[in-house]
Length: 517
Image 1 (cartoon, helix red, strand yellow):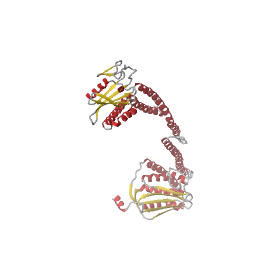
Image 2 (image 1 turned 90 degrees about the vertical axis):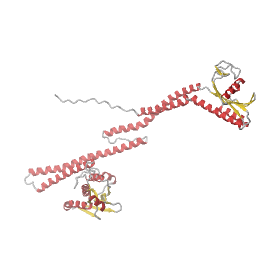
Image 3 (image 1 turned 45 degrees about the vertical axis):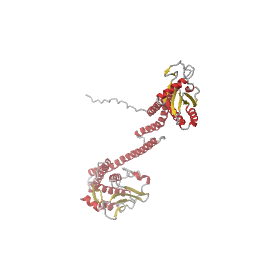
């Protein structure tokens, strides 16, 4: 029975809606909303708003003329003419003197006004209706109709407004007749007749509907064109960045994300450009790391194998010196592996801080003893100076490792005088202590200072085996100090050497007793 691997077909991933389609959809919905609002208010409710406005104008004219009769009779004619000119309202004002009725003022602006062609019979009818209604009466006359007695008759009947037949060639619009009975201060009675023509709006509504559909088509076409133009301005730089991102995913770190357009798009472009640069640096550092680690692993392994074969094949070579070489290289190999494990734990966050109070000055002094052999053998000098002993609250093992790695780094890069100075200074103002490690080497260029904390980063880019340490010291220092949430840095000048430093908060006596207890 043979083993067989079956690959199921992968369904193609559904693509989302394009920017053009979404923009057109949103603009079309917004356009539809505007059109609905326009249709409701400009067409559907046109008659309602128009009639309400005309009724309000009639009420205004009624109020003004009534007050003029009572308070300022001399202004009656001018007020009637003003409303006639401004609002198209016909008016007739009568004085009732016993059984006789006299017209004392009025305004005929329509030319064919109903109340200016009415018979005495209709005037009597409207007067009686106003009395029966409490002094106010309003009647609406539709096209093709006229008031006869107390009834409304259809077209082709005798028109009491004049001796003519009312048909569609006569009154073609809705008219409103408003009647008010007014009594002045002297007890004289007046009849106020107002007539306002409500222009037939059916033809206007038809015209507006036709315009509405034309506007709707134009707006939708405009929304489509606008969506295409906007989407091109938005999607073009996004498409360009998408193409560059695909190149970046293939490992081409020279992908160009530079685009022009909206601020958000340009900000995204700058972020992707920065990410591309950082990925390029990381890729370069990763390759250097692999090359350097391979070199550092190969060197001790080669020496261990070589000395072991010599001791096996050549009589008399099994000497303590050769055995010590094997032990030293094995120890160096072990240190390199341990440093790699420490760095991985620190970066992964699995190595936790074990905080405790300890004397920092004593810890630094204890490190000095480790370099006695190096001082005696190779002539290196490691000096330590301090102003006063201080106690800090930190992880003693990690801080010891920081000091040890900084001194190793200084030894590897110090000058011909082979001098390394370690100083401790206390700041009473800040309540912090600074540990500085200074070498007399060639210094670090300013543009490369931010990069020296990376794993295996080397200024001269030429790999050389560290005299002491594994080459991962500064990266481990960075991770430890950042876990302590403290400040650190480097000061360097070409030709005069470099000074690496870090600071810790000083633990006062009371606080120290509290932590110890």
